[in-house]
Image (tube, rainbow, N blue to C red):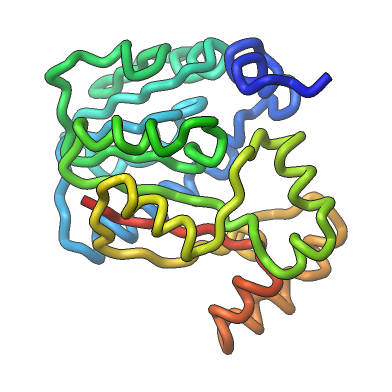
Length: 235
């Protein structure tokens, strides 16, 4: 029987499949967040991360913004337990959904990093999120490419192993944000398949062809080979 999203995140199924909750990628993701903030000359002093997982992205950003206030919202009790294993100054973790936030909570920067592709009603989530921030950062896996559609198995693995129930390319990702009421300020591709260590032999083999092709033909590479995500700043 297929595992429901509720059991996957709240019942501990995701932790069984991913014991580190992807903490090993957090410093890389934090670096990309810092990049899009810096290149748009923003100086946020309060952050909310929705779906913060084990909290390591916020921990990394604390080094860059030591005076800022950070809040992490996480629905999984297992990830929340990992995040709160140590005491943190200027950093608060909340276990729950939007209902756990105060009605008047407002932040300079609200982040969803690899989150809304997991959510059944992601339009509703995106619209609800708008009330909590001035600016918003999204990191969106671009699972749809020529090779993933032709092979079909990669999309099935994303659904079973990572809990992705919606699949995007650049156009549909940006249109989803715009249709939810956001204005796109900036965006760029991120290359986890070439920047981060890959476990599968196929991914390691395709690492350098991807890198070379992307330097010459970025749009073609993203649409054809895949392996990229989209970092978006919106308001």
